[in-house]
Image 1 (tube, rainbow, N blue to C red):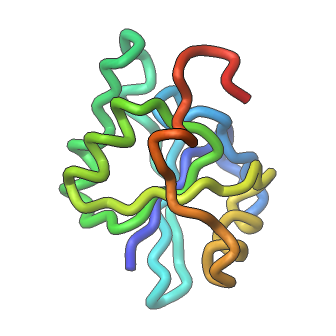
Image 2 (image 1 turned 180 degrees about the vertical axis):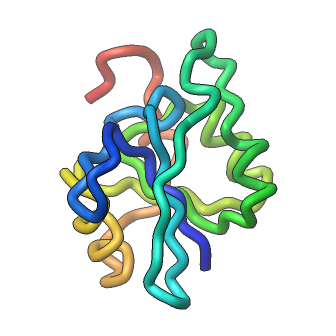
Length: 122
């Protein structure tokens, strides 16, 4: 399974998670089958609000799951329509924490009520 996680920095497993999906400077692409990951830049981090485009890039990578601390309803809908499951990372501070919580089954799937509806949502 391929998992994507928005990050604020490139610091390996200790990378801080970004609070917002679309404006994260980096994404970790983790492969749960071989317990590996790589950190890639978000080439579309500078976009107009509501015009987030990383979702299309994710389909090319074969992403199955997104772990995030915050995501807008529009982006969540796009990803879910592409078959990508989204889980709230329970304000996980780091990549390692988010992946551990997910592997333990401790994270809840995103619903419409859990998406961000504007700035300052958390």
